Length: 166
Image (tube, rainbow, N blue to C red; front, side, top):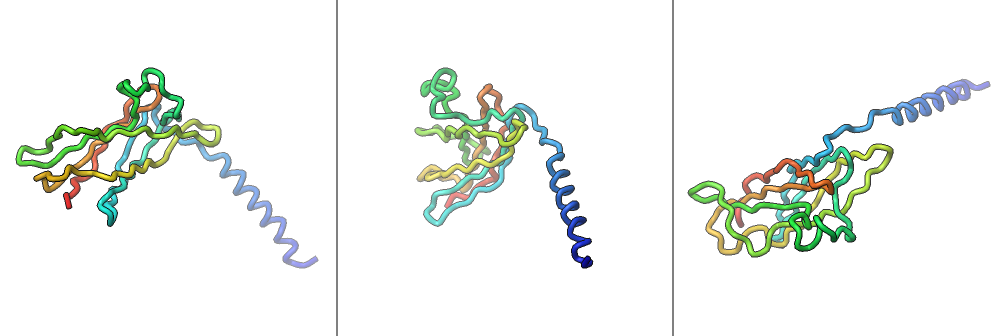
């Protein structure tokens, strides 16, 4: 019997043991209410931007499907949009939220947990074709974001850093 053959069964046993132990890792535990964290704000050469937010949700009920159109998610309802942003400009008076014709509000699609745990840990990317008001005299703007789950639990509000207006 060659020495290599003696090592092969131990190597396979070690691999099986490592894979078996990985399956026993504890499931992530997050609060049932969604939480947000700011990750990135990338301004593209076109002048548009991409906002990246991280999120967690312990009971896995973040996101809306296209069929979610009955109250409280109907088009005229307060919770039709589940990711809502506030827009603020830096002025001599501090951060001020000017009136907007079109709000920064989005319907994040329903996320489906994988595995046996309903917990979700992921990212949301928002394409912002226009991210500051044309003609603004402010030199910086920022966004505050809140995510709502299907039980109408609001996340923490997370802010972007001050973003210089081009």
